[in-house]
Image (cartoon, rainbow, N blue to C red):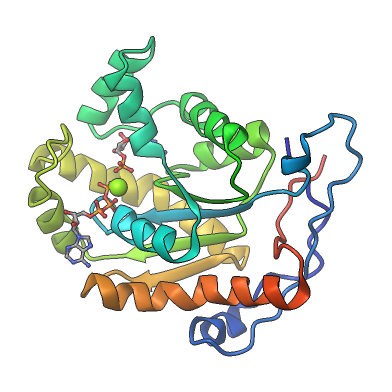
Length: 249
Ligand SMILES: Nc1ncnc2c1ncn2[C@@H]1O[C@H](COP(=O)(O)OP(=O)(O)OP(=O)(O)O)[C@@H](O)[C@H]1O
Ligand SMILES: Nc1ccn([C@@H]2O[C@H](COP(=O)(O)O)[C@@H](O)[C@H]2O)c(=O)n1
Ligand SMILES: [Mg+2]
């Protein structure tokens, strides 16, 4: 369990966010000390991890861009969808239910998904994570705060038109049970109804970075790169972990 002290000022203000995205100045407050540690954490977990949530509609390119971020910045990639598909493959007690929900484009109960993420976060030696495809709903978001007791530092939103997402998903050819037009239509509806409010929430918190997800993979990554570069620079120049967000007890 990680705790963070209160954020002193917004990570990068809305107005300066576009500057940061183009490699200009980025100001940020640092607040990473663990406070009041009755529940002792292991030395490697004494600092709260740096968490990025990766949002976007089905087929918007989240997984593809996460691969690039991992290659360049060494974050640990946790895909909520992949963790759920692993439950199906391992035929766990929730496997059959998860399969039916995914086939129907529906959202798996938050408790199930959050517990899977929590297990990965807690068993990892990494201190920086990309959590892909999560939170899908306000319920997902609140459950993560309640169970993991952490907030994201950065939220990426890959903004892509529906027709482009449909084209990509139908051409994906990875044998996914939900990559068909019927399920895709349902997923798009669910995205609009349930994920949009989450995007709005992080926009209002000043944590959202919207990426235009149309174009070459490389060009899209050029929009992502400076966001993480600015964090790396801050970390090096101040010799601290640039983490700001918190969930207070
Ligand atoms: N910029 C791009 N232009 C064209 N095709 C792309 C682009 N980015 C990704 N793709 C392709 O589109 C498909 C969907 O991409 P990806 O799996 O990264 O999306 P996703 O957002 O993770 O989707 P899902 O939410 O369904 O997991 C893949 O086949 C991928 O190779
Ligand atoms: N937070 C989540 C994430 C995913 N799901 C279910 O998995 C499907 C595939 O997810 P991808 O991120 O790989 O596209 C998704 O359509 C949901 O059925 C979920 O329930 N909760
Ligand atoms: Mg994906």
